[in-house]
Structure formats: C-alpha cells, structure tokens
Amino acid sequence: MPTNENVRIAPADGKLGVLIPGIGAVSTTFMAGVEAVKRGLGIPVGSLTQLATVRLGKRTEARTPMIKDFVPLAGLEDLVFAGWDIFEDSAYQAATNAKVLEPSLLEQVREPLEKIKPMKAVFDHEYIKRIDGPNVKQGGTKMDKAQMLMDDIREFQQSTGVARTIMIWCASTEVFHRPSQVHQTLKDFECGLMKDDPEIAPSQIYAYAALKMGVPFANGAPNLTTDTPALLELAREKNLPVCGKDFKTGQTFMKTLLAPGFKARMLGMHGWFSTNILGNRDGEVLEDPGSFKSKEETKLSVLDQILQPKLYPQLYGDLYHAVRINYYPPRGDQKEGWDNIDIFGWLGYPMQIKVDFLCRDSILAAPLVLDLVLFLDLAQRAGMRGIQEWLSFYFKAPMHAPGLYPEHDIFIQLMKLKNTLRWMKGEDLITHLGLEYYD
Ligand SMILES: NC(=O)c1ccc[n+]([C@@H]2O[C@H](COP(=O)([O-])OP(=O)(O)OC[C@H]3O[C@@H](n4cnc5c(N)ncnc54)[C@H](O)[C@@H]3O)[C@@H](O)[C@H]2O)c1
Image (tube, rainbow, N blue to C red; front, top):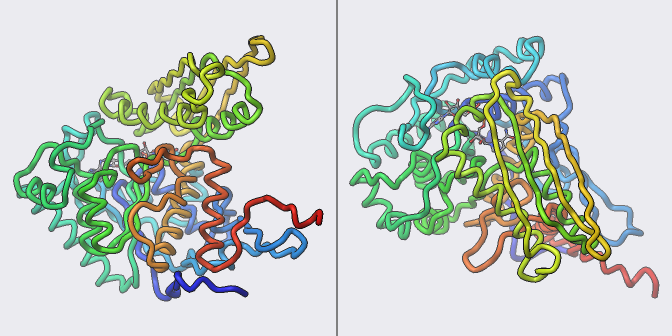
C-alpha cells in the first residue's frame, strides 16, 4: 500500500480527555450516548467515525473499510469527560432537566454521568443575557480567569492520567461581536486579557486557556471564539488544530442538502423563508437579539455561498432569505422547523416546496460532537495545525483561510473529509473521473 511520506500519525494510545464548556442538552446527550453505546444500549446513529466506510482505490477493488479501521481513532472506551457550567447540576441532573433522553435510559448510565460535576465557569452576563447561575469563577482579570481555567485543565489531566485532551464548546450562544483591535494579534489579545478588554468573550478565554495548554479547540456555537487572527496565531504557534463554527444540524443541514440540488439542475430561486419553534435553554438564550444575531449570521450565509448569485444573477440575483427562531417552551428540545422555498423552472414558471422538519436538536448534534472530538484528536496526532477545513462538514459557518470562501455544499464537504483521510494514509484521492473503467 502506498504511504504518504508527509504524514505520520502517532498512535491513539492512552485515554483521551474531552473538556466541555457547557454541560447542557447537547453535551449531556453526547456523553450519555457514548456511555449507552459502550454498554450496548444503543447505536451511534449519525456518527461517521462509528458507522461510515471509506472507499479506497478503484471501484473494482472492493476496498471499503470502516473509517475507524482505516485511520487510528481513539475508542469510545478511551474517552474521559469533564466540563464547566454556570449551574452546579451534575451531567446526570442536567441530562434529566434537558429531557432529551428517556429517564429509563439515563438511569442505566447514571453512575458515570453523576460523577461529572461541572467546574466553575468563566461567565459574563454581557455575552449571554437570558441566563444566570451560581457556579462562576469570581474576581481577577480576564487573564487571571484564563489562568484559573489552565489550572482546571492541569488538575483534570493529572487526576485522570489522560494522554491527550480536546476541548469542544457546547455552551450557550454568545452575543454577536465582530473581531476588534484586541483580536488582531496574540500580543494585543494578551494585553486585552490583562486589561479586561470588554471585547474578549468568555468563549475566547476558554479557547486561549486550551490552546496555551496544548489542547485543540472546536466550537459548536456560532460565536466568534477562535475565528480571530490572535487565537489562530496561537493555534499555529502551538501546532494545534482548531475548527468551528456552529454545529450543522436541523434546518441548516436540510438547506445544505437541498440548495446544492436546485443549483445542480440550474433551477432558480426567488425566496427561502425559514422559521423555527424550540423550547429548550438554547431557545431561551436565542430569544436575546444579540445571541440571535450570532445565529442569524451563520444561518444566512449558507445559501449565498451555495447558490453564488454573482455567478448566476438570473437564477439567484433577487433571492429573499429570512430565518426566524421563536422560543416556545412546550416543545422542549423537539424543535419544529418550517421552510417555504419559492423556486422557478423552465421559462421562469414558479413552484413551491414546503419542508416541515420535526427534529430533535440534541439527537442530531450529539454524533457531531463525537466525530469532532475523535477527528480533532486524529488531526493533532497527524501534525495538522490551524483551521481544519476538512471538518467543514460538521459546521454551519465553517472556518476558512482569509481570502477563501467557505465551502457549504455538504457533498463537497464530505468528499473533502474522506479525501483528507485518504491523503493522511497515502491512498489515492478519489476524483470520480472514472475514465479508466471504459478504456
Ligand atoms: N442542538 C443543536 O442542534 C445545535 C446546533 C448548532 C449549535 N448548537 C449550539 O450548541 C450550544 C449548546 O446547545 P444546547 O442545546 O446544549 O444548549 P443548553 O442551553 O442546553 O446548554 C448550554 C449550557 O451552557 C452553559 N453555559 C452558558 N455560558 C457558559 C459559560 N460561559 N461557561 C460554561 N457554561 C456556560 C449553560 O448554563 C447551559 O447549561 C448552543 O450554543 C447552541 O446554539 C446546538
């Protein structure tokens, strides 16, 4: 088998620590799910690392190993969890409150979940308006808070003996901010931490602490976090991979399935109206216009990038795209998302498509958390640093190099992901040209 001289992947020996800011619906569904799968109580549906295969070589070779057998990934039994939250509830209590999983299932994984007690959070009410909790670090500058988080990470690593650690942000969506002066260089950022610069968000303090401690960072929410020159400079300096932003589940997932299809057939579009009702804590936080603005930005950018109205002005030049989210407590985590899509065909004749997706947000997000943890760990062991564009598959607003547009088409994203795995292992990349079969 050919080998890629450029990539050496260190083995996945030892335990993998998973540190999670935000012990809420998504993270507890992820952790409870991993514990359930380990006990044979469920199947990790939705996870590529656990269920997907990757085709290698020519179609005639019939080589399609499982991804987890093809690249060396940490096993589920190697994951050790810990996290931070502004509430003191254990992961068991938080999962019970979130009401995503059945009490009878939670009971069977109660023991490991009860042991996960959130560490005191770094929290700033200016960044998350609708909630407040008691389990928060007090006093000191933002730099002192970063040091406290580094102490937490050190203590976790020492007490558990993990060989490697990953951090993944599963906390609430922070208020929308653009990068400012303090985010331009690492030096500016560190000065800002010492001076308590108001433009530095809590998620950035976590990310800074993680990267300083040699821990790769993934961002499951739409907030800026590592998507700033300063923190990317730190990631590169420390040779660490990072990825984000905003897990691609629910409505945006549907958008990235449907929109590439319309464009592939050169069907036009006048409008796409999306509305949602959801009643979990995420929904409550998103009632705040500042947090909603962060979400709206990531949700809106998707169609524009996929449809490329500048290249196809006749088809998409006057597209009207709107996204609404309404907090509606009776539904809990069981969101309902409606899409009305006004498309047009031959000679401009209009048609409509209605999508009503009764989805379960955290059920869709949990496997993404698992895959991101395992792939980010793989990337680190393969010596990959900075933005991991091949993980765009998982995000609504994929981070990308300056000057590049992000790739939103989920099928291109999947090809990029699998080709990256092939590249890591020195296998031929698959272009789907296939002329050789007809020679
Ligand atoms: N579920 C999905 O499909 C999905 C998709 C994309 C993005 N997301 C994002 O993932 C995140 C988690 O979603 P969720 O449904 O679990 O929300 P949730 O409200 O159930 O959990 C978030 C938790 O974060 C905690 N928190 C807030 N600020 C914190 C801080 N500074 N430090 C530590 N903890 C803090 C909250 O107390 C809460 O327990 C949200 O930002 C959400 O927008 C979710």
